[in-house]
Length: 257
Image (tube, rainbow, N blue to C red):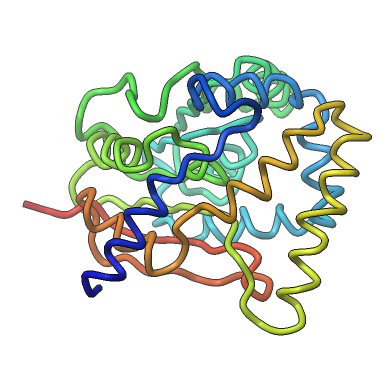
């Protein structure tokens, strides 16, 4: 990365997009937003992605090593879809999921109880930028559609690195921006105009899905995100583009000393 690219990347990282107001903590606003849309969150994910989000999660978790005795962490777990997939694929014996939205966690706990997974998956309130775990605790981790919501991306990734064991794998699933004409233009129109209208009607929080579009535009994707992973102690980073570039899977390992 040359100096100009590094400057543009740093500038992009400093561009903070918030769900509601320009003033106040992004973290508090994100927590409020997800609490607001929690009752309809799973339904809207399936509806607005035409069910593709489930396939994305399966492909993301497939990047983790298979070990049914591993202790894994699901950051920004939401309603625990990713944590459930970890168990389903035999990637973990136990999973802890953390999130800053209590309403989302409550729905996730009901889901786990109904599937009889509450003995293997524990959900708890936790701030991704100040994780309540000792260093070198987890055998692996994943986060789906959460890192772009961090108030401080560098700090959040550094915390995730801290609680991983050396050499352990981290997987990030996050939205990206398609580059292929004309899909790029069609996708942008849908994401910017159609999705917020549907979200407004169904979730009763019109700003939540406007924020989704804006936060994706501001997020440092692909090579820029890999550079940020290197800066926070990860190595061997790579990304896998999905569905014509709508989102990417990022895979990296905690550096060994």
